[in-house]
Image (tube, rainbow, N blue to C red; front, side, top):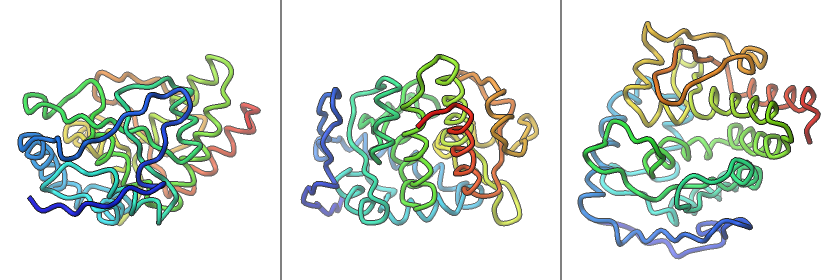
Length: 257
């Protein structure tokens, strides 16, 4: 398959933050099967996201060069992304501690798993993979408003010092970055990565079994969630400006930063 190789730059291959092991994405080592799995996932989600996805996601996916025929090369993605917002994705081996994750966000670096899920687990994978991380998350980092929000959120969350503060920051992340909804084009659209990357979660979020509530910081802080089932309650923002306001309000309340 055709593929343009971009020479690594300081933006396209960021250094791992302190304390994180250096992981290298070897794009040419991906197998034909792995590229095909990416293509199947890409086609299945884009078939509905063109109607149900946020225009911020759709525009971001195009601007960072996501393709239906191959696993993304982070060097190419970062070359495009850094020029737009200064963000970059860097490879990690899997989950990293919460504080390190938030510190990465504060530095405009997004920890990205580089593995491809097996074909037998197309519909559900308990841990992140490159489809969830790059297809689900990274397109929104190309939007200046969302990119600034995510950086500010990371700086705020990294300053949490109590279990209660950490839990509230986790709920804010869950109901925005992972499972957020936005009002666009006369209806509700998905933008959270858990909805972007999962047909089942997105269908549930827009269906009759999920209660869609107006976004407010009080409501989000009070709402528990479970990671191993479809969501009963999600929150809808009118614009990403509300996310900025929520971070500022959370900083005042939690006396962080």
